[in-house]
Length: 173
Image (spheres, rainbow, N blue to C red):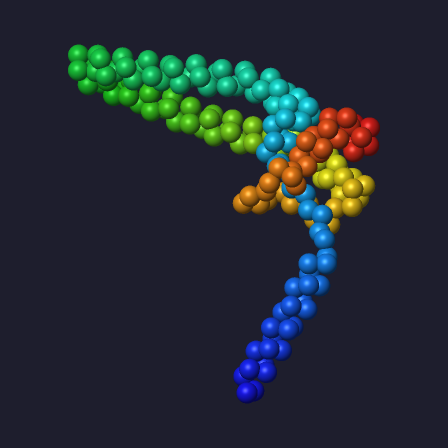
């Protein structure tokens, strides 16, 4: 009998708790940060700025990569007919060029990532201000930026992009 009473009281407590939880309505929104970084006007401008800033170095790296391929092809083709000393010299030059190329590639990636992080930090800040503005004015209880699934009904990414593009959340930026 004691077990039945305990089960009934637990069931009753569950119904009370679930009915009070159902009475609370949460307004939830979801933001797709990747879309903001891809589609917002300041993000597109930052991407173009970075492309322009790093274009010359990228072209240099492409030329150097092509030069390495050409030297490797020449060594593969003519290596057997070269003297031992000449072949060793060309292999050493190719190895040095390859090492320099890898170093330059690594520095390029590091510099690009640093600049990208700098540029997109301000966009992230503007997005956060826009999200807070939307949350305050539209009475959201929760806005998420990471979810396994979010339906289109709670997706407010377009609103954030519009605010960022208009500049109203940037303090005049």
